[in-house]
Image (tube, rainbow, N blue to C red; front, side):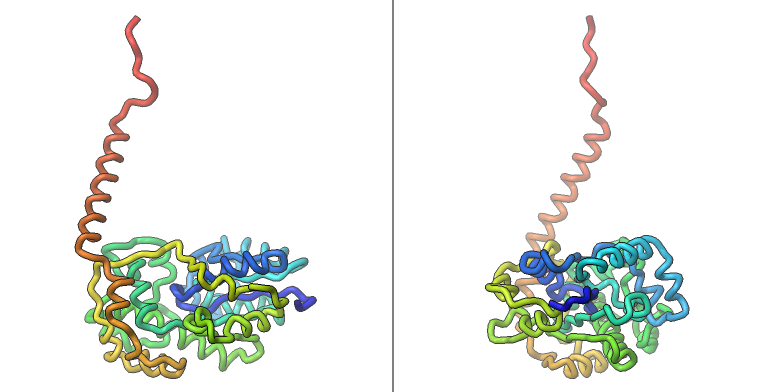
Length: 309
């Protein structure tokens, strides 16, 4: 292993194997590397800080980012640090200024269609179904200050949630290409998620060498069958994957990354991501039961009932 501690951040869209990678790295190399998965979540606030170098110092001074970066600096005094996830993608130039030559980037890429469908199961771009800090701080839209595809403003109202999730995938990977061009000094490894789980691929070996970690048996490869997804969900929203053909910039970018946008299995996608009609009704029943229980608890008297002497 490298004698100089390093810090590595993921550059990804999310929903591309970062949970599995964090768990595998902890199990195999937890004695050498501190591994965390999105420890401050959406607080990296990419909606505000993407392509905003003028706000880099503001970002690094904002809590909880300031405390988080300070804690990483403490870790680097003795060990390396790996942050899996996706929410720090807009902060990479500022992180380069902070950590200098210690910074490395792992870029994880997944086929845009299943990525967008997976984002959809988390209700991205579904304001009527989700109102959280992830939406307010990390869901990209063409009206955001640092967005590249401003031309989408005019067509945004006509795009369905699936297409908007494709837009999220596209913006983040266009940003990744831009970082490669403008910051060639930052060591960056690009891996496709599909390769990480392919027994015939050397992707995990390349990852180990990129980190400078020792070869251990069975290593990361021995963890491939242990799929990890704490947020395995489905969606009742209908999505036609073929709408990707209406977005040339997304298709061209996918092809540059080595994907065939037609290389999808509709039945597999339906089984994995589409919530059945029974599931929709079951979810409604569960929500009603929870609501009734909550109302009942509010009506219950506190403490044991008093008894007459």
